[in-house]
Amino acid sequence: MQHLEPKQKTGLVVILTGNGKGKTTSALGMALRAVGHKMRVCIIQFMKGDLYTGEIDGLKWLAPLVEFHQTGKGFCGIQGNPIPYHEHRANAQCAIELAGEKIRSGQFDIVILDEINNALQLRLVDLPQVLELLDARPPDLHLVLTGRDAHPDVCDRAHTVTELVEIRHAYRDGIEAQQGIDY
Image 1 (tube, helix red, strand yellow):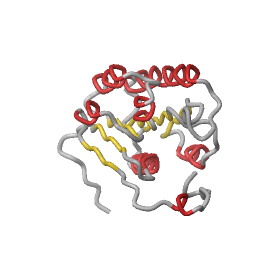
Image 2: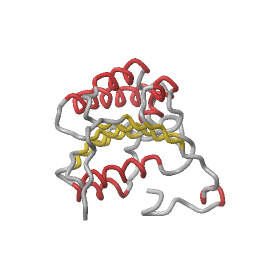
Image 3: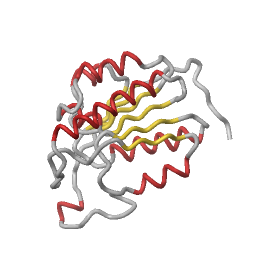
Image 4: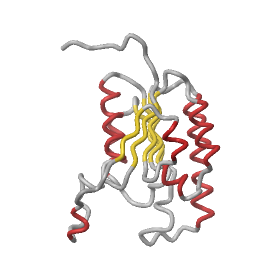
């Protein structure tokens, strides 16, 4: 099989946003593809952390090329999450600091900041902090930001922005989240 290489490697900023299902899944698909090219990936989840999802154990199989950090305490203010706002914000502040370290480290080809758009919309992190991460990105590093409600200023700095739109979701038909598909 022929391997194509770009004439010039350019790190991309990719945003996956919208109310449709599949933002994290798409980012994890990029991680899987990158591992196939022996690229190093760091994934930092800003919001998830209070419920088990299959990617927690699935990503272990991709080590050492994938480094995974789950920094959140669940989705702030929804689904009965009992954690106070200030604790969510403190965790997100630790995650933004970790993201800066990983972006500047030179150890990764791709850094995925899962649910950072939600964290920004909920003011768990601040717009200047996110813009600073974009500015700190080395020119050959791919940076993927996921989550609903991507901020327009962040989108303006991205190379690729994809909005996933929900057309139909099984949950709305009374079907519970399914293992391996939804979590």
